[in-house]
Length: 116
Image (cartoon, rainbow, N blue to C red; front, side):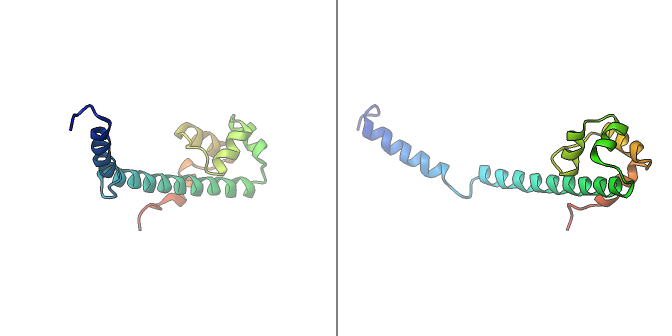
């Protein structure tokens, strides 16, 4: 069989595609590991956002009022509270100052949530 014939390429592709669909490949494992890591990160962002919302409401502030006092945008505050934003340390400090609390208090509910 000539290597340039269409039937030769079908045989070669058939072998390659069965290799690519192997469920035990290291690529599949890495993908699952990345998904697990993403879920842990999302859980941390959700917990942090819920904590900010709790402090904001206990101070009787709206998202807009907290945004004005912290120098951040109202939509950004909403995104943080919903766990959609991966907030920076600087913005954690701005929000803590606006709430008149210590930044470590905002982080206090995150004690090892990713460990079982």
